[in-house]
Length: 298
Image (cartoon, rainbow, N blue to C red; front, side, top):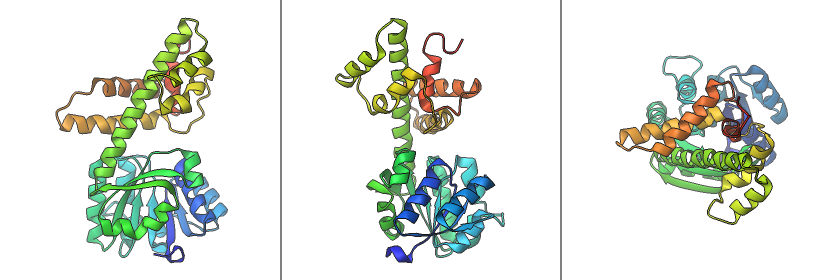
């Protein structure tokens, strides 16, 4: 499809969805409608891109031929694709392509594909492994799953959102890969917090320690993104501890289904769950350092 052929709607315009909508608007796509459970957020993004501030997911689908969903979790996804709701995306699924970008369980994507196809539409997984900045700049890393025909229909649009685009297989496969990406990232994050926390307790210069980490086997992408934030207690949220717990939980459920014991993943999951329990779940995942540095969580 040519760029001019797309009429793009968004359901979920938070940190990631809102910036994706702005990106597509900036590069010439017609963003026709947006919806978020937060009405103020809906109106703010609609004003920025000059589109309809929709009152329901169904209204977004009615005005669009391509709908991007970026919702929080499985329950939210089931709600926007509910079979018996007049507000559901399924009310106007015929002829539409739905690109589902949240980190969800693989089964949800399979269920959505079945429901959408029964009503004459198509669906694609568009799992993201990037941050808010990449969403705004169109440099996401996108792992996609679904039928090849559906993927090819929206491939030009996805290319304009990403710096690296991969179709990894049938529906559900992208969600599996994304769960593993985030599981390993979360383990790295918790491990870095423990290393820096111990270094701090020993009285080591943490800037020096991070420089040495970066030149040795302790190096990681997480060190680049979170190391200084852990040191300086700057936990402005780009990817929340609550989302880290959710995503590690998805990976652990996959492991349990395969009869695998993943002790590092489980310990990491417990750390991020603890952050939620003590009221720190909306901190960035770098905030896990608050649990490991001496004197920070007394």
